[in-house]
Length: 255
Image 1 (cartoon, one colour):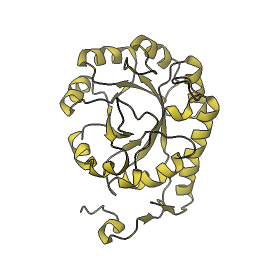
Image 2 (cartoon, rainbow, N blue to C red; image 1 turned 90 degrees about the horizontal axis):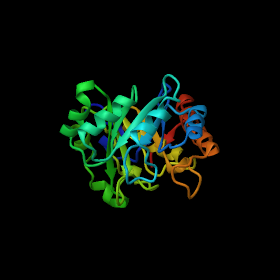
Image 3 (spheres, rainbow, N blue to C red; image 1 turned 90 degrees about the vertical axis):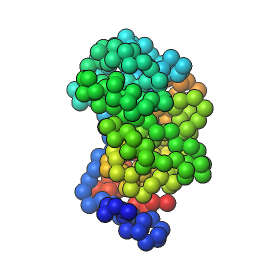
């Protein structure tokens, strides 16, 4: 075990963690946006990053040209994120030239070498998605090795493994994650206003920092890619409620 390993991990006792002594703001990415109005609503709600899906098989797919149009609506300090699944290096670079300041999200089977080849020439930051199996099978996913393999990533995005790519609105079992991941993490997969507080409570103590990524949880039910401004605001309010618990030193139990 490392010196940073929490006491409960050393003793084997039930993991109940006190809140951090200094406040930390959970950053929020809203993903799969396809409409001008939804981009504006996400910014107004308080999103830190906006994700555009450049994967043709996704119902939330937009073209690189459309992603560039939508990204031009973003004010300073709101980051565009371009999501790719097993895309060629040349296509990734071409799309990135259209969107100033974009972060790349690799959400397929890309190797560390492929991620590096696409992003290193421009020193472009990237996220690498780790697809965590559902249920007890998640216990066997070696997240620590995954973090080591993709040590050049700005953060590791945790998503549920389902058929195809993307979490499909499903959550994985957060309690099965290692107690000390030692990386910046982005929690994704089936998040919504009703469960994000629990997700932050369980995952934040395991990470250097934690962000959250929401897509289906802020959509009009039954309409993929069409976002609901009210659900966006509710999601942000729930995240801030979790942050407030840390700021006021309220104990947060890790189940």
